[in-house]
Length: 349
View 1 (cartoon, rainbow, N blue to C red):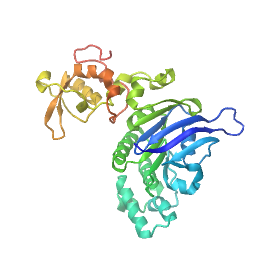
View 2 (cartoon, rainbow, N blue to C red):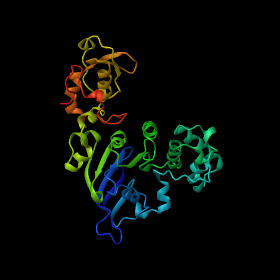
View 3 (tube, one colour):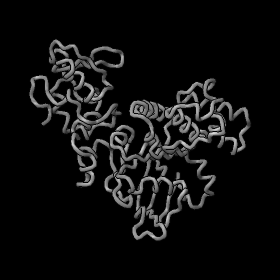
View 4 (cartoon, rainbow, N blue to C red):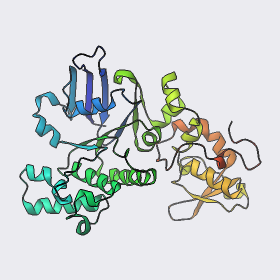
């Protein structure tokens, strides 16, 4: 896969500070993937993000966008090639929503008709009705709606890459989960290269194709898929960040249809059914809530494709790291309903 963003030995030192904010970071981001920068507060995640679009200049090292050294590109031109979404959204309060989204296209000299068409296209893309929202002002929108507009604005000039700094951090949990789901649906359609900053493990597992675990001074501790990081943390720092419940988190990353199913007859008379594209975690949760020891698995046409059982899921847990990354759908903590098996024994092994 083509490399879109590369940081090569990047260091950032601020005057008067003994230790660098970013210390020799080397990182490669492939075209079309979401890479999450994950780590504790103050570890240099946001500084790294701002180095990519030259809001901050590196002290040492080189940064490339689609093979081009960004230090040789005019900063304004560079930022038109990289969308930027921040937690506070940063919409201009005196501009309408159309004015905010159309700002960069107007700066690029687009004709009014083309700008208007692009604004309406993007509003529709992020799930906001153009006729309703085009003429409104930011203060008339909810936090979630403002964040959608922020994403639309970042996409206005159709940049190949996007940087997102805690984009869902200032939103209530229910709205945050909905926006994360909408964001993944949007990414499936547009396929941008995205570097996203968060300190939230749940968000990183849900959104990231790969996760870059950063320690102090943005030192790269581990760079791998969510499932691999859960299964094999590189050191105690990563293990402590992941915390307990890793096995249950891994079940969220495996689709039911990706494992070997058993015949429907093998699970007997059960009332539970799940879709093949649901996670093993969701299947297990549904089975336990119904008191069943198995579930019928339905294909995309709603027909039985086989079945999954409690014992099947238990066997798959150690192998979850080998499976493709699927989207988790909720908080990764272990709910009370998942702590006991149907026979009353502890569900934890």
